Image 1 (spheres, rainbow, N blue to C red):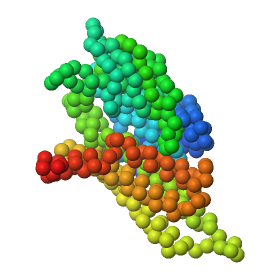
Image 2: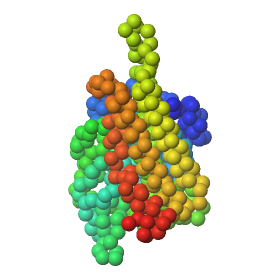
Image 3: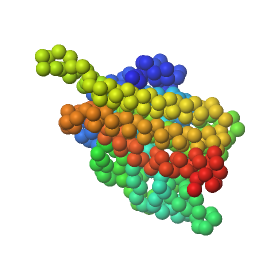
Image 4: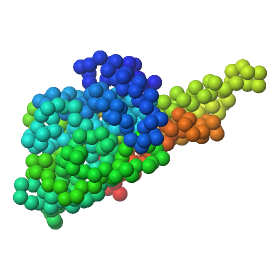
Amino acid sequence: MLTATSSPAGNIDAANPLAALNPLVALTERSVTDVERLHRLTPELAEAITDAGFARHFVPRRWGGTAGTFTAALWAVAAVGETCASTSWCAALYAAHGRLAAYLPEAAQYELWGDTPDVRIAAAVVPPAGEATATDGGWRLAGRWSYASGVDHAHWILLSSLTGTGAERVVRVFALPRAAVEVLDTWRNAGLKGTGSHVVVVDDAFVPGHRTFTLPDLARTDPGAARCHAIPYQLVAGLQFAAPVLGAAHAALRNWTAGVAARRGPDGSPASPTAGARRTLALASAEIHAAGLMLEAAAHRADAAEVTPVTVAENVRDASAAVHQCATAVGRLMKAAGARAQAEGDPLQRRWRDVTAAAAHGALGFEAAADHYAQAVLGAEGAR
C-alpha cells in the first residue's frame, strides 16, 4: 500500500514532513462522491493539491519553486491515486505543466510566478489545434481544444497550434490566463470522471510574443538548470499519466483482497479462498508490484541517469508497459470479483473504470512505445 506516511518519498516536497500529504489524502477520501458527481475537482481539493506542493514542484527555484525530482512526484501522485485517480491525475498534471511553463521566456515566467510559485496550470497541447496568426508584438489565437484536465481551477492554461509553413512549420505553445478562455462543460467519461477534462474555446485572443515557445525548445538545456529542466520531454511524458494508475491499481488490489477476506461459509465462519482466488491474488499482486518497479526505475533514470536515445526509449517503454500491466491486473481482479464488484458505487469498479480510461491515453500506447524502443536499440530497421 502506498500512503503519504509509508512511501519513502510520500511528500512531493522533500523539504517538508511526510505528513504534509495527509490533509490532501483525507480530503480526497471525503470528496470522491462529489468529484464523480460534479465531473471535476471541488475548489477545496484544488487548493489542497496546491497546499501539498504539486503546483510548485517543477517550478524553477528562482521563483520559489521546488525544482523537484520525478521520484518524489511519482510516489506522491501514486499515494493520492490510492484514494481517487481523478484527483491524482490533476495533481500530476498541475506539477507537469509547471515544468512545461518553465520553458517560457523570462518575462512570461515572471507573469506566472512573480508573486507565488503556487500557480495551477492546465494544458491542451497534444494534439495541436486552433489557429495562430503572427501579428505585431505577438500572436492572435482562436479555436477549440479538447481534454484540458483540471482547467476549472487553473490560473493559466497552455494551448498549442501549428504555425508556419513548409520547413518552418512547428508546434507552438501559448500561455493564456484562465480568464481568456471559455470552458465548455463537456467532460462525461466512464473513467477518470472527476478530472474535468473539458473542451476550451478561445475567441481571437492576443498572446504577447514573450508568452510562447515551440516544442523543439523542450530539447534545449540552459547552463546551470536544475535536472528537471535539463532533460528531453519524452523521457518523462509517460510518468505523469502512469503514476495515478499505479496508485489506483494498489487500491484495487486492496479492495479485492478485503472482499475475499470478508466472505463467509454457510455456518458464518470465514470461507477459505478458492484455488482460483489464490491464483488471482498472486498474479495481480505480482503484476502491480512489477509495474511499480518499472516506474521507479523510470523515475530514477529521469532524475539521475545519463540521457541517451536508449534511456529515453526505456522510459517510454516502461511507462506504457507498467500502465498496461496494471490494467491487466485490475481487469483480472474485476473479473474474479463477480457481480458484487459491479454494483454502482463499489470502489473496485471505480478503480477499474479509472485504470481502463487511463490506459487508453494516447501517450501510453504500447505499439508506439515498442517502435520507439526498437528503433533506439536496433536502428531504423528494428522499428519496421
